Amino acid sequence: MPKEIPNCKRFTGYKPCFPDHNCWEEGCKDNIPTGTKILIINLDAMGDVLMTTAQLPAIKRKYPESTIYWLTLKNAAPLLFNNSLIDHIYIFDASSILILQQIKFDYIMNVDKSQVSCSLLNTLEGKNKLGFGLNENGKIIPVNEGAYYNYNLGMDDNLKFKVNKRTGQDYLAETFELEYKRDEYILELTDEAKKFIEKYRKRKKLVTRDKIVGFNTGCSELYPNKKMRIDQHVYLIKKLLKKKYKIVLLGGPEDTERNQNIYSHFKGKIINTPTNEGLRKGICYESIPDVIITGDSLGMHIAIGLKKFVIAWFGVSCWTEIDLYDRGVKLFHEELFCSPCWKKSCPYNLECIKMIDLDRIISAVDKYYSK
Image 1: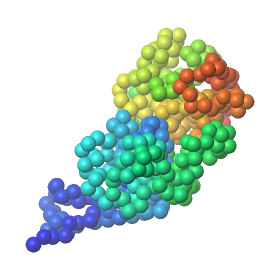
Image 2 (image 1 turned 180 degrees about the horizontal axis):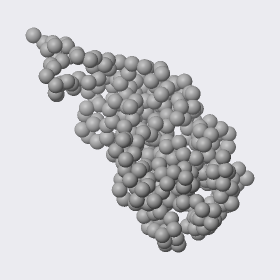
Image 3 (image 1 turned 45 degrees about the vertical axis):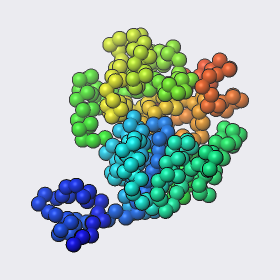
Image 4 (image 1 turned 30 degrees about the horizontal axis):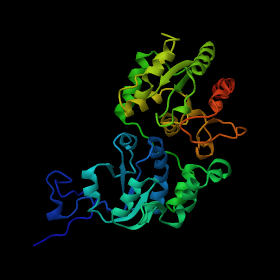
């Protein structure tokens, strides 16, 4: 005779949740109700994926008994590891889509204004859909009233570049019809990662009293004009070394050559961390400095997630949309008519990068450590 399938987060139907206990025959040993089933679709930039984790506390406040599924790209998935508020992480591929198509969700929340993500929202089964979908002509549309402001930011350059003062977390909470309480990113290190960090610090002879400043030197290749010039980095590092700060270079695979170039000016005087050991190791290295100097990049979002003091410059991107949570300084140029612009090539000789106030960055580092 068919038995009722347990509606418990632990139960898979593949193997016992506990050794020597048959949940199907004997009932749940420690039932954790599935509750409200929520799928988050987030396939966009990795920094955006990390920023979206700030919505999780609000989701749990509204739906305390819930199961959260998250669909993202393979390169972004490590950002979500060890996050206690996410129950299932799915990599965007055919097998994941097949599985998700069988689940009847209570809510599907699509962060991305892209045809692929919007198609997924349309395709998957959910009682309530929030964010963005596609209409019958393949056009991206808002699917709930809360998404209208977010949608209009993409349609109206004046609203996005000049009028809007709300952070990305603020208007994304509105998109998902959540209460906005300025919740922080969630980025958690494992115990194993913490041990690795301690070993690396010892190997590099870093001690607690050291004043350590990290330079996140690069950015996504999609928007190369977010980068500071190499000579600007060299100027800053020379000045900071004179003040007895310890300097750490940070970055990903795309920054290997650039960091080596910067390091060549200071061989043995600064630390050039590995760039090809994977995202989670990169997060470990970025956890070492107290202060992170960075452009608007994944490295900046990781620094925010790690609750570092962040000194960030902005040129092509919107500084108003970034929340440093009162732990940092934002450098931007309101006087430049062309900034922000989100252009991949600059017709104005990258004035927004040339005008970065390098001495103000040094002053911000000094001010942080003086406290």
